[in-house]
Amino acid sequence: MPPTVILGVIGSDAHVVGITILDQALSAAGFEVENLGVQTSQEDFAAAAKTHDADAVLVSSLYGHAEQDCQGFHELLAREGIDATTYIGGNLAVGQDDFEQTRETFRALGFDRVFDSETTPEEAIRALERDLTFTTRDREADTVQA
Image (cartoon, rainbow, N blue to C red; front, top):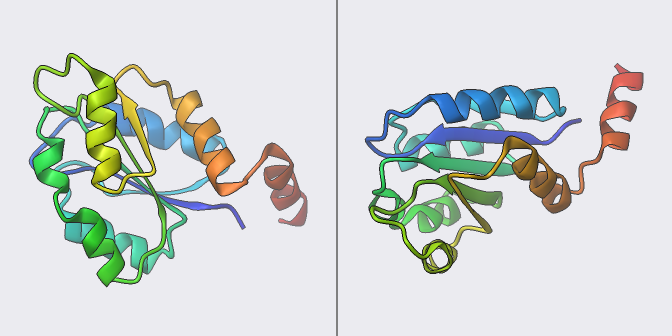
C-alpha cells in the first residue's frame, strides 16, 4: 500500500499553483495524496491526517506568515495521536534573507524537513522516499499486486 500524504496551504494563504504541481508529481510517483487546498487550518490538517492515517503531512506557505500559522501545530498533532513525518516549504518568512535561520525556526517548531521556495517536486519526492522508505521497487510491487 502506498504512503499517504496530506498536502495543503496553511492559514490565510491562497497560493494554489505550487500544491497543484506537487499533488500531481506525488501522485505520479506513487503516493496516495489528499490535497486539502488553500487556506487550510491546523485543525483541518490534523483531521485529515487522522482520517487517512497519514504517513506525512506537507504544509505549504508562500505569503510569508508561516511561523504565525504554524505555532502549536505539532502540539495539536500530538494531542490527536498523529505520528506523521512533517514537511513545510515555500516562502516562509517575509524578507527571508537567511534561509538557514528560517530552517532552524521551523525545525524548532517541530517540522522534520524545511524547504525553500526553490525546492523542486523531485527533491521533495526523494526526501519523502528516504524518510518513509518508499522506493520505486515498492511502487512496482504495488502495481504487480493490483
